[in-house]
Length: 133
Image (cartoon, rainbow, N blue to C red; front, side):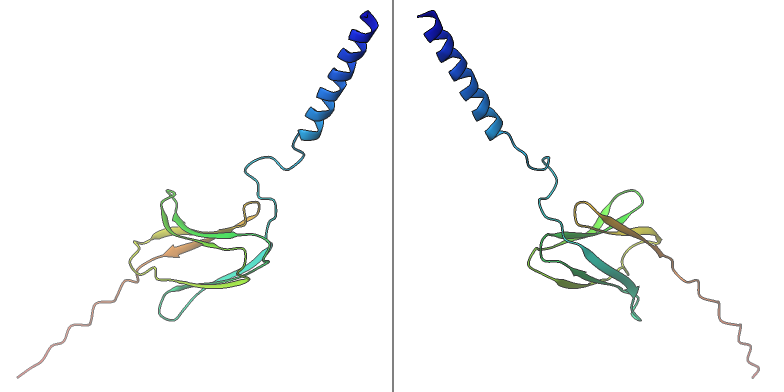
């Protein structure tokens, strides 16, 4: 009888361990996307003084485009979905105050950041006009 109980106990323990091991997650840790999208981007200004962002990415994941200042205040954010392969964004920065901003493009793992400096041009005072009657 003792050997029967010991045999059943060992069998139950092995079954429990086998089930626990098979149910354990072998996936990536939480917070990381399963698939990431490789991307290429370019940033340039237009003649109207707006910022143009061109983005080409793979369709396997999402990409986030953000415009922030040095303090971390977010002025623009747009997520480019999985199914979109290309995106063209035009940002009107004329209402933003002078300063240094960052445009960051991220797929969750890789982030590219480009600095953007906004400065108002100082106009020269018109030369004085003197007229004689």
